[in-house]
Amino acid sequence: MINKTQKIGKDLMKQLNQKLILKILKENQSASKSELAKITGLTIPGVTDIINELEGYNVITNIGESPIKRGRFPTLYELNKNAFKVIGISIRSKSIRLGLFNILGESLFFLEEGLNNEVSPEYTMDYVAKLVHKLLELSNTEISEVNGIGLGMHGIVDPIKGISIYPPHLNWRNVPIKRILEEKLNLPVIVDNDCNSLALAEYWFGKGEGINSFITLNIDYGIGASIMINGKLFHGSDYGAGQIGHTIVQDNGSLCTCGNYGCLETTSSELSIIEDIKIKIKKGFPSKINEIVKNPDLITIEHLYSAAKQNDKLAVSSLETASRYLGIGISTLVNVFNPEKVIITGGILRGGDIVMSTLLESVQCHALKTNTATLEITESLLGRKADVLGAASLWISEFFEGDFSLSNLQNEYIEN
Image 1 (cartoon, helix red, strand yellow):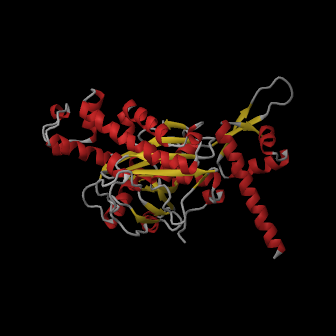
Image 2: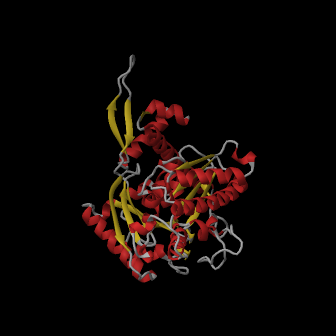
Image 3: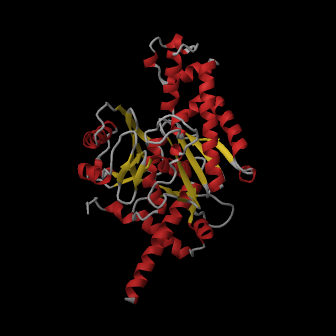
């Protein structure tokens, strides 16, 4: 029993040291054995053993010697960025997005296809599987080159069992999407809430790098938040943490998809903003939107953003109202968690300065001054592919910090 425990301890320590060196190479782009030993505190022979193992797994590459003024030129190593490829998938209200990424989060291929009114779990998962094969074909990628699939789902998700417990906009209940996709594609799948996956993208490749505690707020057709505490995602006891969109901010407000009235999503999501605009246009409110589209039922969020850029009074007013309520929602998060940073993502950013200036003013009015003294509220810079990069980051995070064993890179995936 003692020997078994010691063996497990050594194996775990070896894996931790391997991943520590991989993270250092990601952060520094390249490093020598002596530099790695200095940063990690490991001995040169210890680092050499790990380097040899990582080269055997083909996850790092010897890129030659670096000239120095005196002594032997040290050999430099860097990540073999394409040794680990993953597919990120985002199921949106009107479309499905897929992206093929390498270990550095670089996009190798991107695909987006429309989603029709048929959104049953059976149809949607079958459609997702077909799109994965289409992505592989268009990108000239063999399925054997892919190490895993990450799927970001809105709503409540059990990331341990891979179950979509309740996505409000799809109205599913307890769908085992991990198992379904693994059976269809014979690839390992990680599932989590889409905001959590976005936070991982920010943590590895965005404005969350080097930040221990931050909140990512995604404002799109819905509103959700992800909470990073001490470098770890906070899921909550029933995986419901971060559902800020269903915090009530307006007494006697509109009915929300969750069944309550006056939720933040009913005041500030893109869906609620455009529905409010349609109602006001039908009531005769003057707006440049009438010049863009004649039929109020055909008004889209793009029409609203276009009108706002032209300083249309109705469009600007709608975005300001939505942003004030967003500030109230963010203030709640800031007062409870006191993060170092809040990163705003999602389609709402197309509203520009109107959104951010009003939102910031609202936070300052409603949050505790002690909690905003050093707080930074900033826009994400990850761009329109952030959702699929986030889904892919579920695997990238596993590669650098999780339980994923590098020995799996030498073996085909076999479903348990």
